[in-house]
Picture 1 (cartoon, rainbow, N blue to C red):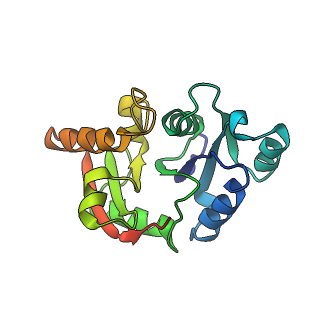
Picture 2: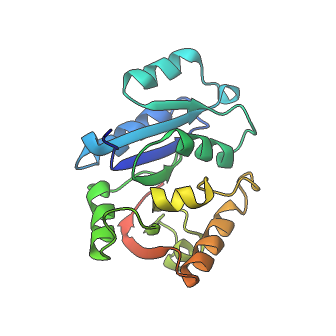
Picture 3: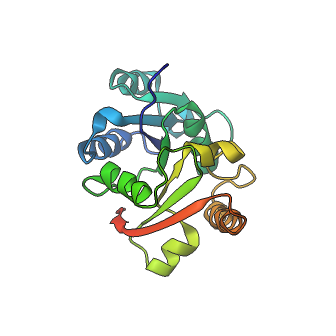
Length: 193
């Protein structure tokens, strides 16, 4: 049986000059980078070229390409589809993790008794916005693969970017009321932009 990584950081990048610094920080701040898969979606229309893709692959990054709509939603969903981790952590060019981010997210799941990870769960983290806003929009979060597999996407492809976070949060709260997903509010896990 193939061993799956614990985490997949899901990064869609619109800034070819920034992806590696973002990758470096996520890996440096993980307690166990050996358990982290990095899944990067690039788009040549943003200025990515074949050499950048090769450079990323040489680092062990899973590289996919967006040839659909030039938007966050398609990019994050393409990167998620290429990933294999048990917990997916969506990311962008401007979201950076705290120290020990992987341990903090795992601890949030363990405290709720949700491992092994065959259950649907979302860990809401802080994006640096007001707490009410983070709880309303859920822009910084991690989801279990089981949650991802329910819909086959992280954010609904009916959106391009705007309102996709509102819909994600609405769908999560609706499913929580139906007993389909556990939502864990951990605003002490502070991401920064």
